[in-house]
Length: 148
Image (cartoon, rainbow, N blue to C red; front, side, top):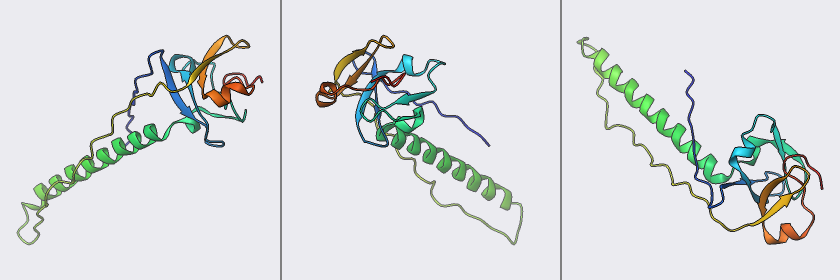
C-alpha cells in the first residue's frame, strides 16, 4: 500500500526555505516557489558548486519530521492490525488473542525557519538566495544554473 505525505514548512519573513548541502554541509536558503518550478531538476550548492537532486538538500528537521510521520503511520497500521486480529480470534474457542495497549504515536516536531542568513542576487538567473556572511564574501555558485 502506497501512501503520500505532504510536509509543509513556513518560510522565513521573505519566503525563503532552508536547504543543506549533503557534501560540504553548508546551509543556504532559496525561495520555495522557485525550487518547485518544473524546470528545476537539480540544484547546485552555492559553496562547493556540485549539482545534486533536490531531495539531497533537505535539512535534518524535514527528514526527522518525515520519519516521525512515517513511524506514526506504521504504528497506526499495527494498532489496526492487532485490533482486527483480536476481533477475528473471538469466534474461535481454542485460539485467543488479547492485544495490549496501543502503540504510541510520537508528536512531530514543529517546523520553523530561522532568519539568520544574508540575501544575495544571482544576475545569471535573476534569482535570489540567502547565504552565510562568510559564504557571501567568496564568489558563490548560482544554485539554479551553477555559474560562478
